Image 1 (cartoon, rainbow, N blue to C red):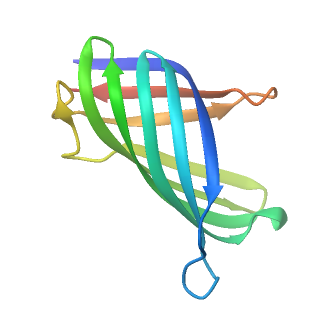
Image 2 (cartoon, rainbow, N blue to C red; image 1 turned 45 degrees about the vertical axis):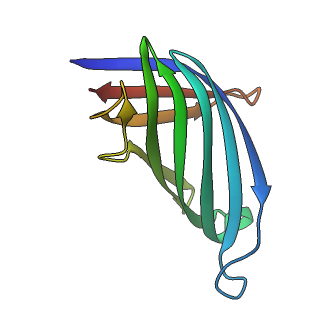
Image 3 (cartoon, rainbow, N blue to C red; image 1 turned 90 degrees about the vertical axis):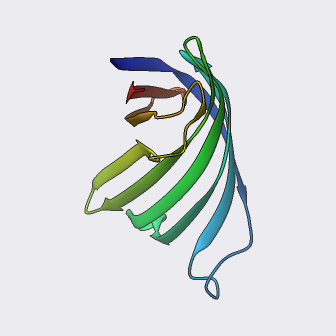
Length: 128
């Protein structure tokens, strides 16, 4: 059964200690999800490059604990983002084997948008 969950989320990034002699920036992230997915997320993001010049990349992994519709449990999300030459790409997927509780077996992908007013929106397409 394929389903789609939509809503918004709040995100807080906190810089951490740099990695690899300062070449890689590290951030702790916290999220609160609203909408079809209700819960809290926590994770780590590593980035490298020059975002101000429009050339950079990042990887992140986060865990989400909460409810997805009437199912309760947790799962992990993995991100890969890149920007170069005026274009951006983002791959955001549920980590296979990460689901617990009623979310055991979850698989899917997530699409993010940021509106002009700064609102962060998610669209999670998933199967359980």
